[in-house]
Amino acid sequence: MLENKVGMIFGVANQRSIAWACAQACAEKGAKLAFTYQGERLKGNVEKLTKDMDGAVVVPCDVTNQAEVDAAFEIVGKKFGKLDFLIHSIAFAPKEALEGEFMMTSRAAFLTALEISAFSLTQLALAATPLMKNGGSIVTMSYYGAEKVVQNYNVMGVAKSALESSVRYLAEDLGKQNIRVNAISAGPINTLSARGVKNMGAMLHHIADKSPLRRNVEAREVGNTALFLVSDLASAITGETIYVDCGFNIIGI
Image (cartoon, rainbow, N blue to C red):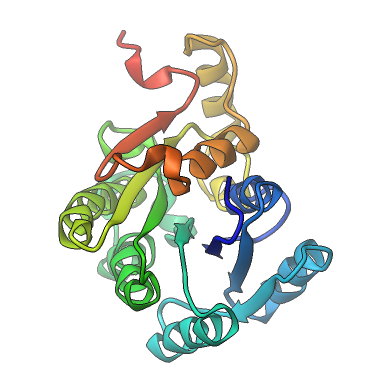
């Protein structure tokens, strides 16, 4: 399905990362992959996970450092000569902004959350476009807190709203180059970043109890959806937010 395709994966922290589930799904279908890591602390994790992956490239990339972003894409361009898809699974807000009342969000926390969790998609799309010479696909990760109030999600919900809007505007900008841009709104998964949200355990229990499928989504299911979106099977889908949450988003009271 993805033979002769090259993808770039942003956001792998450990084996539980949604980004890693996406990478595994794509690699199993023949894609060659480049991975980025943010900071030396995560470098070893990413290198360990990818050491047996044929042809994998691992490069540093802190999206708050434009020089690192430019260097990462330059390395990928020289190694593979092209890029067919990009998976953006990056989000961050200071821990203190993910509890209590949203109106207490500091200016610094707001700017940090929006820059890393939302603007970085536009930043990476701009850098990727020159390498997507024959079209391509960009996929990002959102969450239901973008459109409904989720307790303690706070500024991250605002950032995800901006992210989903960015998907639509980028889809319009890049469509003429046959580059598709979509978001996956995944149900909560017990990842490293999710643990920063207060009462995550209670949230997981509630969704398993109330969702139509009576369970929580698994990372591999999000990975399979990303695989679909970066493949030619999704060739007419762009600007969309696709829910992969065991149906929880359809439930009212």
